[in-house]
Image 1 (tube, rainbow, N blue to C red):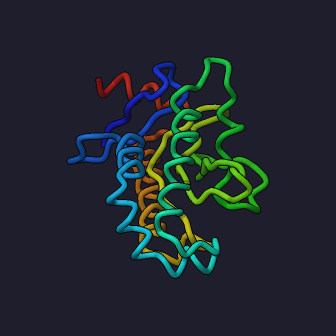
Image 2: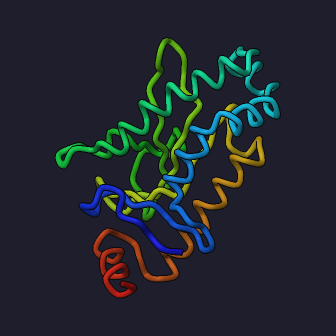
Image 3: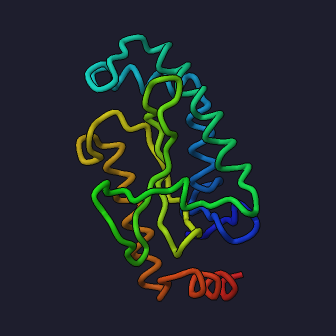
Length: 183
């Protein structure tokens, strides 16, 4: 696996998994902007969509997703040099109250248009304001363990976390050292 510098200032990175042409963030944006992929996803997950979000119209779900992805994509890709990424990313576990080494984090939109967003971007926190994106998902259930596609995202986060720890990476300094050595 390799890492792409998304903001070009070392604050936001994205994993490029072995065998993938794009990094996790750009692959995710492509997927969420693909109407055919969204239609297939929402048809397959209609029960979750209707029970948790009370939406039964796949076209409405597609429209809401595209609306949210535009906002989220602008938020992530147009990060100003003085922007605080800690305001975008929050602990994955809602009850976590303190930082941990390579903490698992999530980014999501606040309620938009009077409804919660189901889009999630997952990352590991190197240190205050510096993150590595590992992937993302459309989360339609209360917990990630309930569905295979969100459970896969948890597994990817843990895989990247274990890789970083194996390489001795525990913060932004050790990560930058690793990047310098591998280029």
